[in-house]
Length: 146
Image 1 (cartoon, rainbow, N blue to C red):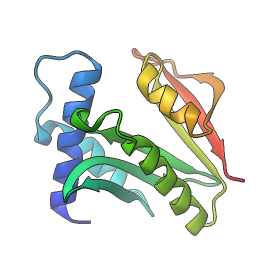
Image 2 (image 1 turned 180 degrees about the horizontal axis):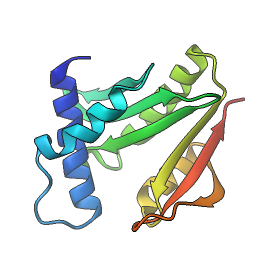
Image 3 (image 1 turned 45 degrees about the vertical axis):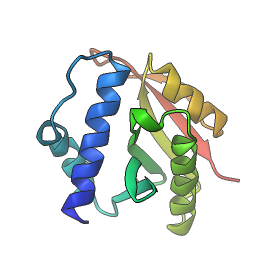
Image 4 (image 1 turned 60 degrees about the vertical axis):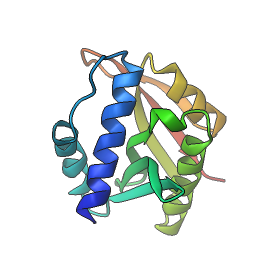
């Protein structure tokens, strides 16, 4: 894994979450990196980057679980929102899962992140009904590959 890609992913995450949460100032790359690096340390973790004209515009961070592939992060730079980057990344996540012999994917999304939920549902993800008991609840989604 190239450190520059991790920094690009952290910068995208900081900008996207700041826009999602209506924060005036995004987190710094240094503040966003520890969570990404923690997930990248999992066995088999992959960082999938989306680029437009050589510029990083989105990423997904996935890792195999016992029977699934879990999407830990999926973010698109706000300047690229609405351009199909999220859907493209989800197709690449599907391909990655197939390549490693998994047919089920899972993720947790913030309960009120309607923009992300709409992208997941259009891509065939289904809410399980499970909701986390965190301060900011998350919903669990699954996708079964056909």
